[in-house]
Image (cartoon, rainbow, N blue to C red):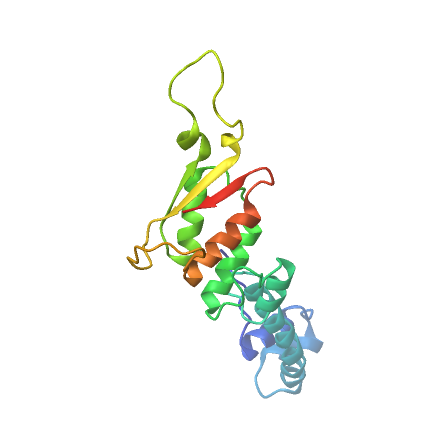
Amino acid sequence: MMKFTAPSQEEAARQLASTIPDGRAWQAKNLAGTGMHAVTSACAAEFRAIQIQIETLATEFNIRLTNQLLPDWETSTGLPEECIGAMASLEDRRNAVILRLRKIPFVTKQDYEDLAFQLTGLSVTVTPGAELELFPLDFPIYFASGNSYFKLYVTFNDAIGGFPYLFPFNFVSTGDNIIRCVFEQIAPANVLIIFQ
């Protein structure tokens, strides 16, 4: 990608001098120590300041390099959001903006698994309900509940610990909470997500 770079003061003076016509009245425009060169150099300071601003904007419009405009990028994409919250790392904040701007729909099970790993570093297995709930034999009548196509089972592969007892509530890590929140936001409205 091409990047605009502002010139030095002397280069800016030469650029400005090149716009001045040639002729006897302007011969000293590039001669150091002359009054004409001093006027050209003084005017070139503002010319260079404009180019520095252009360089800054060219850098800030690139999300992978932005610093000053990052809060504006985040606001325009709805970040920080309730699931993930504010991120500390500049690189994570930039990546979150890029992920939001991509607007790629999450359709396949691999899309969901990759998103979970990208967000938290945790590995999950996503299984469509039709793979788990349909009766494997053919009968002249239909035995399934009819809604297994609208279920998505998410199994956390990274065990948080090996505690074998069951409780009426879940012991989950922050990564699990993020995955649960994000998956519930991006899943179609007619899909029930079951976390295991």
